Length: 81
Image 1 (cartoon, rainbow, N blue to C red):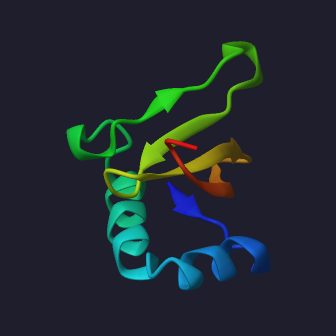
Image 2: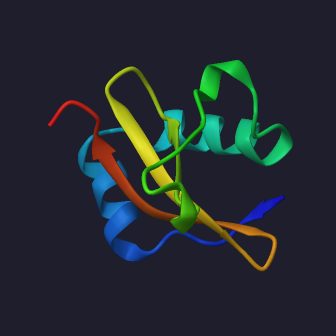
């Protein structure tokens, strides 16, 4: 599964928090195997909306949806805030 290009706000957040390299590594894993254990991929509540998250690192998670067979990252956030 391929990923769509990141929107400007998500890209700015990654750069501000120095997460680009980690994010790109995890996104590559997601594209090849969405169930890879290091991603800790999960469906967010309510599950009917089909919004998912995966771990960028221990502190940050990426929120995404799948549209037309492509991954669309909609947010990166601090998992503990």
